[in-house]
Every structure is written in structure tokens, then in C-alpha cells.
Length: 424
Image (tube, rainbow, N blue to C red; front, side):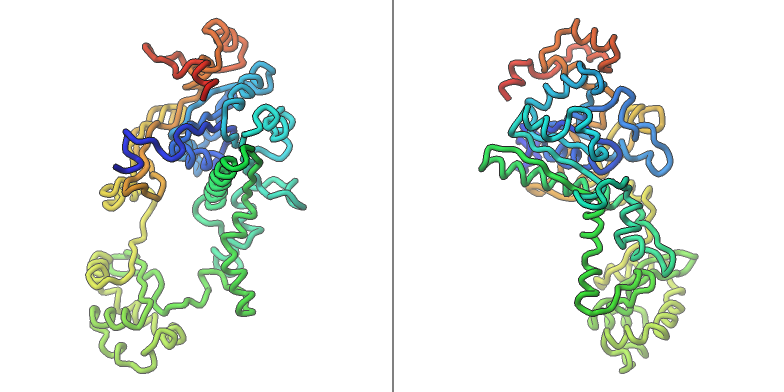
């Protein structure tokens, strides 16, 4: 059976992660580990992760990157709240944070303090910059895209443009998870934890490293993508019948012959000036206008059908919301049904939707959605019980504003006991 079968443990089952993160980078790290089976406990401030309330382009952050997690709401500036987190860390494998340098140390939650409590702890920090001259700066995905060459490569000449999604935040979180996995493997040999760091700027540099190497190899600076000299003659977006657009690619001499035969381009196929791909690249200035005029007679659906039949690369120009109904994603289980609680939906009410799963399979199966993004403090009660707090002590903490929790469901066993937790 697949490793994702409900009766089989996931790869990181039994690994406990304490997460004090917000926005995208840190939550992505926790989501990856959670999807792979780890118990991820999200420690939130009393008002909740700020992304719960974001609108605009941030409205989807919390609902996307916080599935398969538990939520405990704690005031860590109160000594009683800090004690709760310290108790959680004492039984944890990984601690993950993405606050400005120095913040966790001031709270008593830096690596030095927590590794003293738990020498086996793996401490993952997600920062704007790795330690160095820039590490005092405040970084955002857009900031590092601008200073790291990605915005220059994405926009037209003179118009730097950020990529259309949080590429560095998401990848930075993924590298944080990879670092945590590596540290777990090393701990098996040494018995000791360690600090892992991932950073937005260095992640961005890794993304543009191919263009750096292009310059090193050729001595010529890489041109921004909209004005680059393509390696292939036909590798572009075409405007076709009824005002539609479609991306078409013809990347070999064999594909060129197939393309010409399929669309009645007999004269171009026999033109010796464009017999090879490199010749066609040199001829793009006069060749592409001919091809564009010719393809305007066909609809996107007609072109797609031909390219599909003869095996040429093509793509519709798809908007993100259209992916909810993508037949491939639906057929392969790439989307999972999820109900976002009111304070995790950005809409003030529960939202029924689908969410994209990790883009991988284990044993031929996609990793399951085991739990929707949690409501704020959804698991505070059960986690305090695991740590040995009585009902009366929990009530006192709630009344004092140290923790926030939802009332536990009727019949909820509230997880393992304190003794069971201590033996984990």
C-alpha cells in the first residue's frame, strides 16, 4: 500500500514541530512538515496570526499555508505564557520561527535558550538575509526580488517587475523544511540538535544563479525575459481567433516539420533559410509575423487539439481561479476539499473550497489533507491538558488573558495525557 494510506504512518509521523511563524515563509516550512506527517503546533499571539485578517493579495495566505496544523493562542510576553511554550519545546523535535533578528532572543525563545532546555531540538530560523552585512535590513519577497535580479529578469527593459506569486517566501520555507529534514537525519548520528537558517535573499540568488552563470560562461549579460534572445524560434504567446491567447513552442527541427505539415506551412518547411532551429532564431524578426498572421485564423481550441495530437508543447493562458476546475488536477487528486473556519478564511465566515496539495506523490499517492487550517486557539485546551494543566488552571490562564481557547467539543478526549506526552 502507499505510504499515504490512512492505515500507514506518514514519513514524519511522531515528529513534533513548534511553530511561531506568520505570513508565508515560516508557515510554508511548517505546512511541508505537517503534510509529511509531523504534528505541527502553531503558537499564535492572542489576536492570532496577522494573515488571518489580511485582504487583497494576502487574503489566501492563512488558508493556503496552515493546513494540517494545531493552534494554541498564548501571550508569550507573560511569564506564564512563556512557560507554556517552554514546556511544549521540551518535548519537541523542531522549533520554527520567522521573526526579525533578535526578536526571539528578547522573548527568551532564541536558539541558545531553547537548546539548553532541549539539546536535541532543531531550531529553524527563516530570515530576510543570512548573517552578514545585510542581516539588519527588513526584507520582503518584493525587496529581495528587486535587489536579487529576479525583478530585472522578469520585467521588460527598464521596468523591473516582481514575479506573480510569493516565490521566495514559498521556496525559502521549503528550504527551511529541507534543512530541518537534514538536521533530523544528522541527529540520528550525533544525538544533538542544531540551528538551521533559510533566507529570502539567498533563496532569490539561487533562483537567478543560472543567469549569473550564463554571464560567467558567455561574457554577455542575460537580457530580461521579455527581451531575451530565445533559444527557440517558436516559443511565445500568440493572439489567435476571437481574441484568445495561447502559448506555443516548437523547439526542434522535427517539431518544426510536424508544425508546418499540420498547419499547411509548406513553403516555410521547404525554405532553406530556416531549415534549422538556429537559422529560425536568427530569422525571428521576419518569421514570427508570418506565423502570427497564419495562426490568427484558428481558435485556441483548434490549435490545442492539433498540438495535442502531434505532441507539441502548448499551454492555454490560465487565470489562477480557473485551476479549481482543471481536469488534470481533479482527476489526479491534486486538489483537496477543505472548509476554512471563519477566522481563517479572510471572509468572516466559513468557506468551502479546494486547496492545492504538495506537488509530489509517495507510493503513487498524493499526500492527504488531514485537517483544515485551524481556528485561533482551536487546540489550546487539549494541548494544555497534555502539558498537565488542570481545568481550573486552564480557566485561570484564560481569565488572566494568558491563553485563548475554544471550548473543547463534547466527548473530546483532548489528546494524550501529560504522562503520555512526557514519554513521547
